View 1 (cartoon, one colour):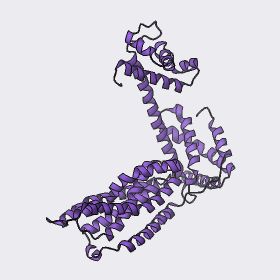
View 2 (cartoon, rainbow over the protein chains, first blue to last red):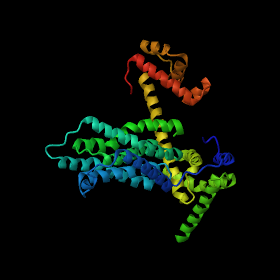
View 3 (cartoon, rainbow over the protein chains, first blue to last red):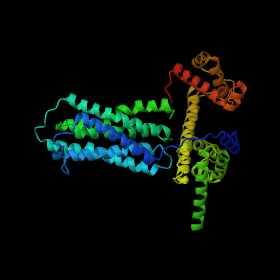
View 4 (cartoon, rainbow over the protein chains, first blue to last red):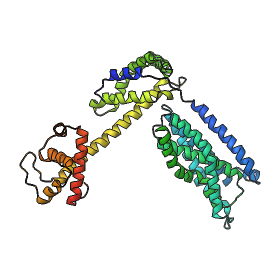
Length: 222
Length: 190
C-alpha cells in the first residue's frame, strides 16, 4: 500500500467522492424496531390472546415476573447492542447494552429458572415436550420481523464485529418474541417456562445467528 | 489547558462540518478534512504501533476505512469519537493481520527446516535418497521454489525475481512444496 503516497491516496479518495445516504439516527432506528414489534405483538396477542391468569401471576418477585423482566432486558440489550456496534463511536452504548442483555440472560435463564422450579413444588404440572418446542418456534417466528429490521440497520452501518452484531440482534429479537409468548402462553409447567420461554433467546440465537450472518455477508458484503 | 481544549473542539466542529459536506458529495471539503486529520491521525497510529515502519501503511488503511464508513457519521454527534473508533479498529485489524502474517512466515521457515534438517545452504548437497526422491516428485514449480530458497539459499525476494513471480506467490509455492515433502516423508506438522 505504501507504493501509493498518502497524499495521492487522499487526492484519489476526494476525487472519486460520491454523495452518500446517512445512516438513520440510532434512536430513530430503535424506535422503528419498537413500533414494528408493537404491531407484531398486537397481531400475535389478537390471535393468541393473553394468558387467563395474567393479572394473578403479575405479582412482584414471582417467577413469571422475573422471567418477564429478564426477557425484556435481553430484548432491549440485544437490539441496542446490535445497532450500537454498527455505528463507530457508539462503543459505550454497545457495552452498556451488552451488559444489560447479559444481566437479562442471568435473570431470565438463571434466577427465573430457579424460582420456577421452586414454585413448581414436588409435583410439577405435566406438559408435553411438543408444547415446549411449539412455544420456542413461535418465539423464533415472532422474532423474524424485528430481527430483519435490526439487521437491515446493521447492514447499512459499519459493524466492527459483524458476528457479534448478528448474535446480539438474534438474541434480542427472539427475546422480543419470547416476551409475547410469555404473556400469552397459559402453560404453568416449570420445564415449559424454562425451555419454551426463558431460554428461548439463547437457543434461538444459536440456531439463527449463522444463517443470518451468512445472509448479511451475501446481501451486504459485511 | 482550556484554550487547548477549546481549540480542539473548534477543530472537531470544523471536521464535523466538512464531513457533513463530504456526505453530500463536496470533494473539496472532503480533501480538506482528510488533509486536516492526517497529522493527528499519524500521531494516534504511531502511539499505538510497535513497528514505526508500518505507520504509513496503517494510516492509509484508516483513511480507507473512514472513506468506506463515511455514511455512518451523524452531524449531530461529535466527530472525534467516530474518527478515533474507526482508527482504533483499523489499527487492531492491521496488527492482527500482521501477527498472522508473521506467524505464517515463521512457520514457513520451520517447515523448511523440518524438510531439510541438515541441509547446508549454498553447498553441493548430498540429499538422502528419500529426500531426493520426494523432491523429484514435486511439481516443477514447487520443486524450483524449494530448491532456490533452501538448497541455493536465496532470499524469497531474490528467488521470486529469478523465477519472475511475486514474493508472495513464491512463498505459496514453497509452502505447498514443504507440505507435500512432509507428507511424503511421513513427518508431522511442526
